Image 1 (spheres, rainbow, N blue to C red):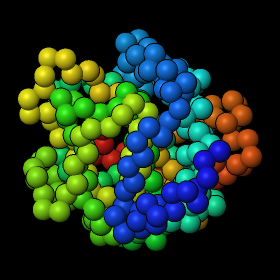
Image 2: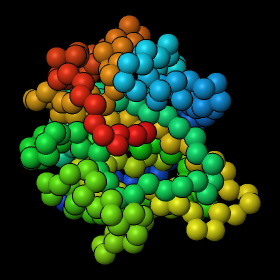
Image 3: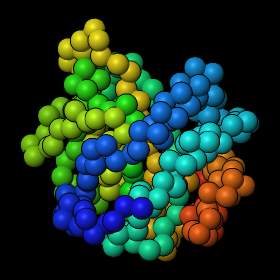
Image 4: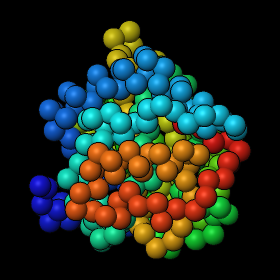
Amino acid sequence: MTDVRAIDAPVEKFTEDGFLVLPGFLPSALVDRLVPEVDRWVDSGRRQESIDACRPGARPPLTVELDLEAHGELAVHPPLMDLLGHPALLGESFVFHHLHSDRRPAGAAGKSWHHDYEQRPQRDRCLPMVHALHYIRGLQPGQGPLAVLPGSHRQVAEKGALSHRGTDVLAGETVIDTLPPGSTVVLHSALFHTRRPARTPHSGARPRYMIDGSYCRTGTLWPPVKPYWRQVLAVARSRGLDAGRPELFAERHFGEYERAEGRGR
């Protein structure tokens, strides 16, 4: 178990900056099991099925990310749970929101500046929501960097308030383009960030593996992002992933699903 006291200094900066960079946070044994699961998830078409299942009138998918053995373990990785439980992040009581898993080719398109705080309409930042971005094979410049805007999580703004800037360089941004395997970047979900395309991807650049998990402090009804969100939570409970944390996959912390225009994965 990680001793959170050993990383108190950077954790306390989370309140100010809205992000933490944790190089090599995940053990290599877990990473070695996650990589082939991501490959199967993408290559079998199950990832696309999970996306198609969010369309109006679509059937729920047969498999969700938490059905994958190592993915489920990642969602409740004890050092991650300890970190999220720090008072500067989510505190003692929090609930799982979602998990997405993807593999993108080097040099793939970027994603405009946005944030991922689920609130409709956007009105306050009273309760924190956190995204853990797991770069299981690390991050290289040829794969396209992550850029974040420190402190922007304290603003109340719509998710796409900066989308007109595309993936432009913004004053005060921090760029993260090099990470070792098993690294995790923890973001306050209201922090503006962008996935910038690689300008000159070299021929040896590897695909960009990223699994993002999201968690919320309890105390309000959070909007789900998938119409089959109950299925996701039920899978977690059936696997016993909530052992010792009865609120982690409890349905009572969510409102009903409402489709949002422009939502994507």
